[in-house]
Image 1 (cartoon, rainbow, N blue to C red):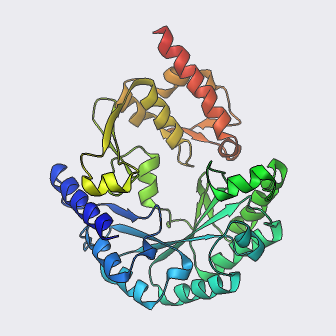
Image 2: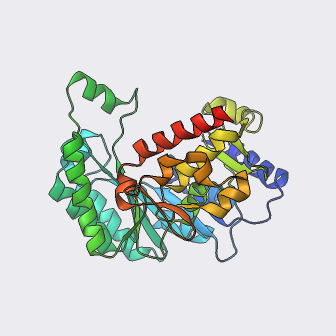
Image 3: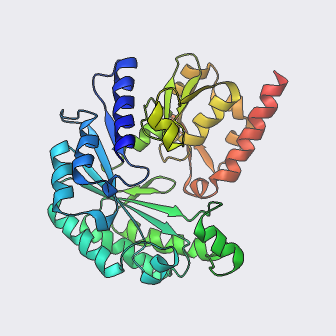
Length: 352
């Protein structure tokens, strides 16, 4: 931990100096769980951005069973404005199936303490499609979190990553995940209490009470500028010429600790790849793709790049005064629609 924190300190200092950063619009500490750090180390980590000015959205991720009075005091002193909790499920059978720490009762006790004690915004991450998860249980979980004041809820579909214990268990038949029909029913079960309580779906997997959307994540989806410190983190900067600088930190902890700057690989995202990434990220959101921004970056309207794959799918994409946005159904079938756009962009690039 000491070597990791020392490397992150060096990297943040270098990023601020190299890119002439005097302040941040948003800060997000997560990807992994910083709440696992000892509180004195967490305080050092949270001090690195130097957030003291008002208006900065400062998010900190946490496991619910790590949250105690000392953790909350550390977060408050650092200027954190939002705590994002990885809940995943409050059904004991589902939690046991994926080896989540803590029983449902323990997690609820921690969440209720957080709700009473924290004065900032609250987010929670949920997963649907887990082994032994039920529709009624998921709907109850969502309603429970909304009732506690979690004004931002992310509902992610389970994905199986190769090499994980769950993927191995599914492959050898000792665990069973929900099939496509069951997942669709689980999604519907999660959506109903969100809509009933006034949450809006502003991104494929993200719901929020209006005005409580995550500004940091919106920067990703708009292909804006962000810097990143820590192993496996990725940064992005628009170069002003239709290309993006992508900075990918090494996943290797030892290499990162030895030299966080030298171990970062850089690449330029340009041409068709830049067009597609811009469309792919924007169409994840209810706001969609701004045509003027696209033309300003790439010198071509999106209709010229993606053709009928974009313009002739009114069930998936619709045009308004600002540009193109996905329909509700479009968010649900986005991957297949984007593949069609990619193929059309590839064909058109090859013909020019």
